Image (tube, rainbow, N blue to C red; front, side):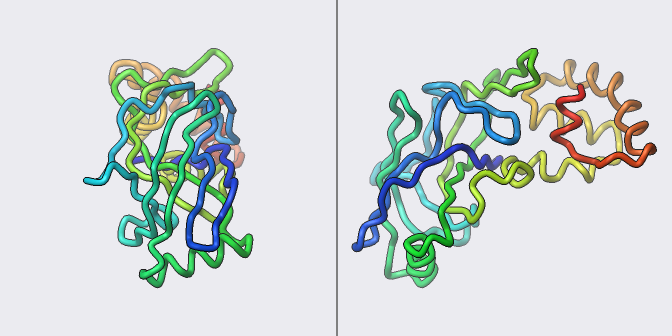
Length: 206
């Protein structure tokens, strides 16, 4: 599962623990260079009541509520309910109402053929499987937005680089191998030159 802090909007937080807004906005390029196309959520994981799990900071051991989600022309809207019997949900609810927890993020997988790198370097996401939505502290942090990009600075071998290209970029194995062969030397040259090891900059450089 990958995490994406996308353009979002919390519209209202009710006194009874309700919350509503948008967990994802279609057509906006986020600070990590991704854009989610309209209708991109082809699969949505729901519980037996037809609701999506709401997590605290993407922590699968810390569910704090459930939400009904729906795609419209604007994005992925949600209407949720904090489960206030749980201590962490009460805490998240209080922080959200107080303005300390205002970001939304999604946990997702890219379905086969569901991502495309445009000539501009933007990654277009058009076929996704949604696992959960989360309240997060920083909804638009460009490094924390995509889990694979956040960890990209730890890549030390060309094989790890190929894996990264497949996971983060949606490339096929053959495509990732071709890109890695040409790009690995450039990446190492930049590292040797002492430039910042920022995966987002490097993807744009490629």
